[in-house]
Length: 206
Image (tube, rainbow, N blue to C red):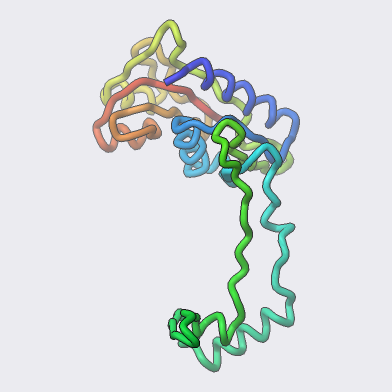
């Protein structure tokens, strides 16, 4: 686990939020993917998408059904609600879906992911509330030269705003701390519930 790369990610996320960017990217590693999903689960990120050097197409700007098509689909499902469940049948040796035949084919938007792993990027959607970034600060706790390990008892003190093992308590509103454990990268409160300890990675707040 490279804490140097994690330090770069922390500073990059802070700079991206200060610049009011809606989308930014970081290198793809197993640790970065787990951290991004954890931030999304805690509400700091709006989306996590695996892609290439160019940003993926935003979902809201993709081709959607028109209002007339949506109304027709709603009326069809009201008359025949069983069409909402996929039923496959064979016609001319080709397996088809009754849902696609009656309601039309489902819209699928592909994201081009390069086969070369070095060209892959993890695209993160940043969130804002009342013109202020949700993620303002992302601070590394363990340093490459000093890794801090915490027990569940230490984490219980920290989430109650008290300092423990040279780590300050969570005093900011909505502040979260992420810990790497043998069960993966978890938030500090979840570690206390599961009675797990581990190495403190970083803290984040708005």
